[in-house]
Length: 573
Image 1 (cartoon, rainbow, N blue to C red):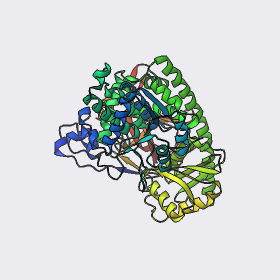
Image 2: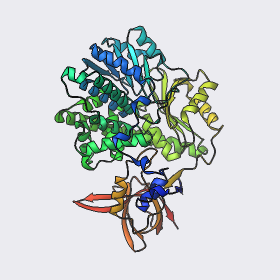
Image 3: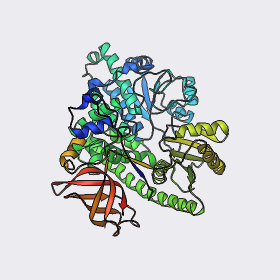
Image 4: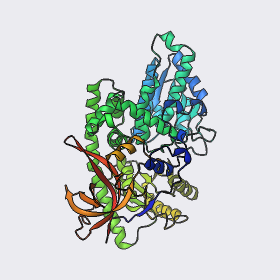
């Protein structure tokens, strides 16, 4: 088991927050909240679309396309962010009475990511006038050039970091491009296209379009369930603006005002839509939607999200559910193989500063998940490679705090210009391609680059907690208080606590989960640690344990009971 250092978040409570319960004062202060306006969750507190660079140019082109009844094609991405963004764009444009709207999503196995020349050629067969990218495009210079040559205008909506050169698109809406001063740099792809559609709706309203077409004015709030799902699933930081978007979307799901697909996927995951939380979207709905893009084609996921018929949505959702089960099995086999590799490395030497792993049988649609799992187990930057069938290896990288993985790849590319054929991504995740004969060369270059700035402190795994909970607040009322204080997510983490407890009882469930009865002072608590290392636990020699946990409500047989969900535990001897 990876040993972790438990660190409690520092906090400085502002006098402006003293009206809140003491626990929330401390939790919010530890997340940089010092005044009530930072916690606003009403839609009126959202940033205005006018702050996004090139918005006017994008809206002008779309306005003309709608008025002239031109063909608008959405070119999406094959993950949950891209699928929700594509569905949102199609739904919004149809609500605006656009004459012809279509979508195209690259199959990751045939075309790879983004608006490549190959995808432009495929799109051209349907003769669109306008291409709108969703969650991609900022790095596709050659694809945009070809689209221009073929007479298609391109509007890029993206949130990924741009390179040194921007594509020659008609308009680029991306909060992370150098000239954009939009206050939130953390919008997901679905958030960016939502803002574009809000701006377009405003322009149509000014032209009295809805009255002319004798249709009701589109209510953009109807699309916030998709925004919430895509934002949470893409793990973008939940800054204030994103928290509002997610909160508003969750409220619509809880009230039964979401698209049938989300309801169907929640039911298949055994989650109650009436009490859905951001974590349910991240760990229950998102993976089922992503399974389509990872194993087959994301068109299945998009069609599910576009369906207004409950029976059709349920049928598509069931297929996504089955794909997710298949994904889990393949992923488990890959993880077992990767762990065997790691054990071999351990026998010969200490683990290096970073890990590059490859097996010719690994599924390229699942290498990102495997990279995340191995990163979590080793607390090191990890790149997992798989063959793409064309003489290249596709890699998916995941990093740890303090190591910007895209910058690492950029530095390698600068020193070895012919080694990486393409790359892109964020601080914590990136993708790349190399020739299949260059794996060993790249592996050495990766380790050499990491050695320039990685320290042993960075490689010390840490668990950040919100400190200890006293027995008087360790109850179901606190569970409800914390649930209502969200949404929680990336960059605004759900509160976790730590403490030392006496062990009254410990036993395995299904040979992989550890069920505990714990005692603190005079109070007893039920706790569970999922997917425990059963070579270490149960541990009959251990009478006390230091745990990091989330207080949760366990509903069983119609009875709600407090349960501590253990995220980490270590014996106290």
